[in-house]
Image (cartoon, rainbow, N blue to C red; front, side):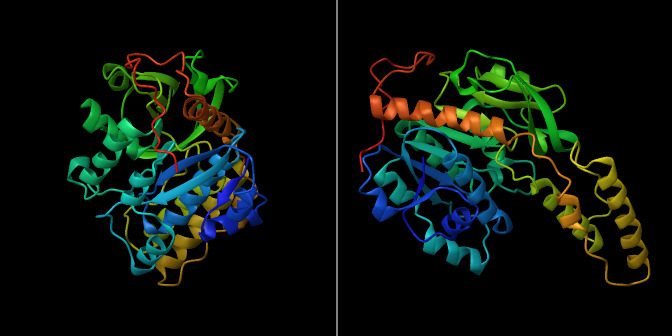
Length: 358
């Protein structure tokens, strides 16, 4: 069912141009269809702000549940922003105060770029705790992405992320390890997920916290886990929302950083992304770039379009399946006021129908 364009956020127009089903708010008011209100706490840096909007809006809009989706983006104070990004947030985003007053059915929290290992020293730390604690008591389910998962595991379960020997960067095969959970119902038992991170919460840390690991990889670790009750917190450590070109663009940014002298080494290829022909093209490009840099010339542009044409997306269907299952469970709870059978350790007097009706 469609996402409702309830304001003039440019992401709506971009998704409509891509063929996404976007419904104008005046038409939505005359539709006899149940609605779901999803918060999107976007903590990504300026360069990735709009792309992250589109990625998560897409996943929500392509889930197959019988509902109209209102997605409410908001951010946190303390995150460094340019004047242009601040203007975007002020014009199109809601404040946490508005979101809290109006209520949500579900919440998505993105990752963020940080400096330093200690998450508790980050400027968003205390505002993020406030949002997560509010959501835990007032929102049916919260989906955390990557760094948001690391933060929640630290302040709620006392499990701090650990640095990896090298950046985990690429697309990796994962297996469903708890097949009876509804979040992975009808999803392939073996599927790919992109990762991009320097740190991880290890499988034994999730299990020590009582979390239930649903999907993991021999090479990339845990991708999907849920809180001990089975649903309040849904935690991604990978990036199933990524576009087909997301890792290519990240690789291109790192090449530019090398060319600008901002990193000492040439970036390695992300794992399992480029086919042999593309790798040969990129190796040739590296030779040309280093040759030009040695002679003080302007470096050439990476042949992005040529490489992008050879990329394969091997994770989108499974990502849509998991998010569609999540949306369906949220819908069941919020609109039918029914206890989900797999929930564990939850007060039976807590109906989980928590959102204040709009």
